[in-house]
Length: 166
Image (cartoon, rainbow, N blue to C red; front, side, top):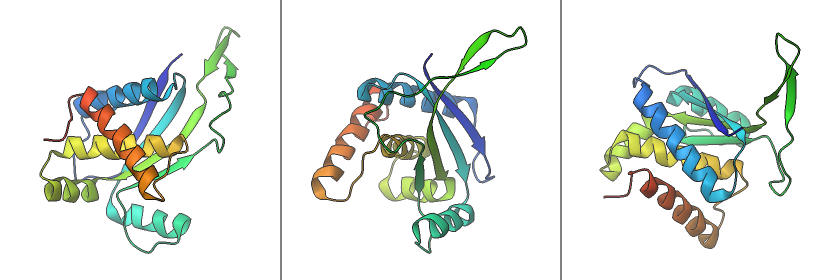
């Protein structure tokens, strides 16, 4: 079993192609290796600013769009993930990956930020994805030290997949 990416596209501003998904799968694999997470499922949804604005307002009480939201399924990351089984057509047990949580990325916001920072949209989407993944594992950036730790981890993963800051 391994980390799996399940994705959904609910926006039409940017074409989500196989190359981008392969890149995000590579990022997930690298981030998992870096954090010692080898099993589980991450659900990723691409949305527009209107959708992420509504979610940001509903779940965080912030009345504006944001770039990425993460919703962790497990509050405590020290526990091992529980493995769930289902029966297939031949009544044989098959593992179902345990969901680590959901990551929601606003593609228009990512596009705007990629232009502001002067790098590709793929790098910005990769950055937001690994940022969201770290949130699923319990990382946060409420103070300078925790923000520096997250930034360091994000940049290390992006460098390993060829998306280093230029």
